[in-house]
Image (cartoon, rainbow, N blue to C red; front, side, top):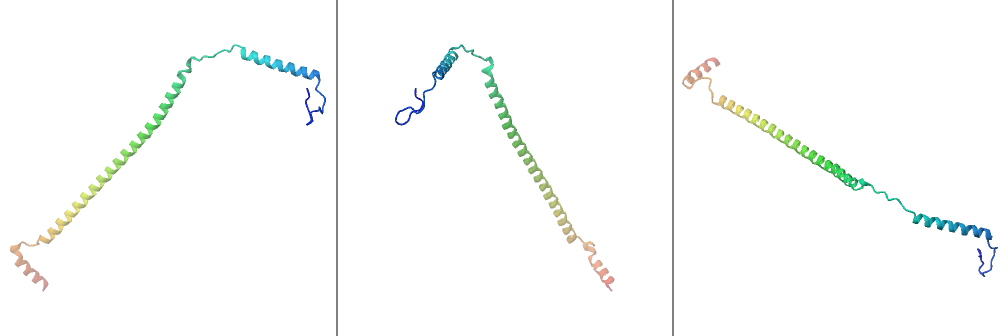
Length: 139
């Protein structure tokens, strides 16, 4: 067997040793024998009894975690909405009280103005005497 040939087909280097060829043939045969033995050897099949429920358990726990996260978000949103409604009701109540107080103060001021405008210091029957008294005090 020629390992190296030139373009013309003549051997440029000598053939390998017969001994080297025999070593390679023996190595090739031993590799093939080992491969045949590995392919034909009996294999132990490992069957796990819990292989069917582990994936289901993983999915169940995953669903629990996801549903817990979603329900926590929903609860938090609901809590915030309730707090906003309570704050709005509190503000409305405070505004209503302020309007009532303002209306009451306005009513009291109006009644005081009406009272001062209508009221007299002297009864109507005594009015002429009161005018005489004012005239005397001015002199």
